[in-house]
Image (cartoon, rainbow, N blue to C red; front, top):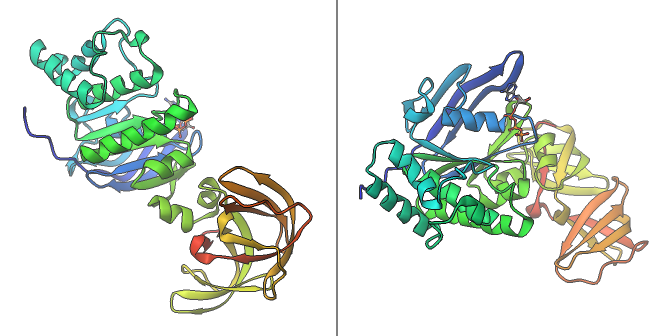
Amino acid sequence: MAARKQAASVEFRNVTKRYGNVTAVDSVSFTIEPGRLVTLLGPSGCGKTTTLRMIAGLEMASEGQILIGGRDVTNLSAADRDVSMVFQSYALFPHMSVLENVAYGPSVQGVPKKDAYAMAMEKLELIGLKGLEKRAPSELSGGQQQRVAVARALVLEPQVLLFDEPLSNLDAKLRRRVREDIRELQQSLNLTVAYVTHDQEEALAVSDHIIVMSNARIAQTGTPRELYEEPANLFVADFIGDANIIAGDLVSVAGAMGQVRIGSLGLELPHRGVGQGAVKLAVRPDAILLDETVRTGALAGSVRKASYLGTQVEYDVESPIGSLFVVQHGRKEPIAPGTPVSISFAPQRGVAIIPDA
Ligand code: ATP
């Protein structure tokens, strides 16, 4: 068996895709480093599937350049790109067995049948489907069909593997397991993966980096943690996690840090290049602390609603800076609605000035 191919990078340089007068992708640039899993995340219609299909060569760019492993593939057809895609629908051939489905790719490339079957068996074993190779796709569960689709994409050992909403046909419980399997496989085989989803939790869970798209453009690129803790704009603050968007005042700056006033509270935060004056802050629900004993220096508020969810309690809290969504982790007795509370912030848990608000 030949040595595994090196994982390759993927680079977009000012790539635009137009369909008539619709601009589906608008001058987008990014790099996926070799061996990384990068998610294209965004709401329906933002251009993520079109971006993925342009990596595959299933759509051609209207403008710009696409490089895979440093090679310009902008004008190459899908067959010449050394990229495989796992489709949302799996796209298995219903009249072929599992083994034949996985061996199909090598067979059409001229690999002798016996060798193609051996390659297919190796991938089926890798993915935990040994013993099911004679079945038809219709005789498999949704999760097993998904694995066949992954084995079929892996069998040619592509330089880049693409996933288009791979979990959308699975039930909620299975989704979690399959996403962990995909991540484990990607890491153990050191694959370069581009992965499309509209589910922010899924993106946070599986990705090395996330490219958040909005209206055909990139809203922000970063690690899951960067996007969650330091959203660059209101769109990302709102789309990833549940941020409270709070008005504040940047009263002074010294070096990278600034003094921010939120109501009667003072906080020291990175100013992120924002000038003094009115600012907007993204405050994560668990960065807000509630205390039943009234403390000086804290904001005075009152609990309006409490929901006990086992591992956490969620609150709606009325306060002088507006209504707040607060999450307290751990098994605590919920604070009863109507109770007065002191509100303070834990900046290290996610309080950030939004630069582009
Ligand atoms: P979804 O999550 O709904 O699949 P998406 O973010 O993947 O959305 P795309 O499918 O990339 O979005 O579509 C981006 C835009 O381009 C949309 O406005 C869509 O209607 C348009 N579009 C996509 N494919 C075509 C096409 N073949 N012809 C015309 N317009 C298209």
